[in-house]
Image (cartoon, helix red, strand yellow):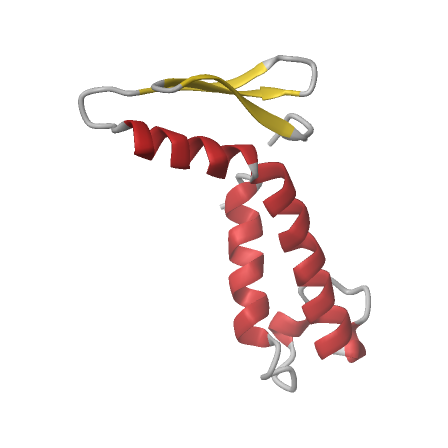
Length: 108
C-alpha cells in the first residue's frame, strides 16, 4: 500500500458542497448533499476526513506509549506485547490500536 497524502488537510467550499484539500490545494475528496446525505452529515464527515492524518499520527504515538510505557519489557519491539502472555494489561488496548492502525494503512 502506498503512503497517504501528507497532512495537514483542510476543508474548503460552501455549505452543501465541501472539499477536503491539502495545504497546496490538491483535493482529497468532495462531499455533497445528496439523496441520502444531509448538510450536517457531510460537514461531520468532512471534519473526520480532515483530521485523518492527525488521528493516524496520534494512534501511532498511542501504540508506542502502550508498548513502551505500559510494557517497558518490549521497548521498541512493535507487536511484542501481542505475543507475550505476561503483558495482559497492555494486550487489549494494544490489539485495538494495532487493528485500527492496520485498517488506516490498508494492511488488513
